[in-house]
Length: 214
Ligand SMILES: Nc1ncnc2c1ncn2[C@@H]1O[C@H](COP(=O)(O)OP(=O)(O)OP(=O)(O)O)[C@@H](O)[C@H]1O
Image (tube, rainbow, N blue to C red):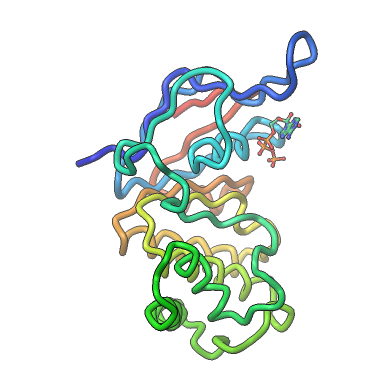
């Protein structure tokens, strides 16, 4: 089984010299297909910074990170769900779900078909033609999950995906994420403040002052 991500003594500091703020330090960890992990920790403990590093959206200032399963090219290979609204307002739901596929070079018809299948799988077929402004917060987050499903990534990173949802919807969105990850045999990492969300994932990592306890 190919390890998806390996981190060795990873650190990320913002700024330089005496004024540098070390957001993440001394992080050594691995992610394998099928793992489902909640990352918890106080506000400012470094969860978002770590997730951005794992997704390849940011580079460490010290240490090593590698993505052996992606030949060290994580860009475009990692599915990401953010905390807030992430849908493009002028595009309808299907177009939003298809967009990463089109960017990756998938032909129009296939991208649309995969988007519609993903929406159907998540129970959102009725919203295929809706615009983001017509969706509730929970519906928009489920569309963001459908977008990840359509792209079929091996690694899914979700940063506080339920922060703006009530507890029923939060549970539903997390169950969709864990279901999608299981279906794809992907690794799933979810940063959350919510103990009920963390409890729905089999493993928990804890961040404290930039350090990670696995
Ligand atoms: N772009 C940046 N420039 C400077 N400092 C930053 C930047 N991004 C984050 N930080 C700082 O790095 C530390 C870790 O922030 P991070 O957002 O990773 O924490 P978090 O655990 O995700 O917090 P929250 O739960 O509130 O989202 C904080 O002190 C934050 O202020």
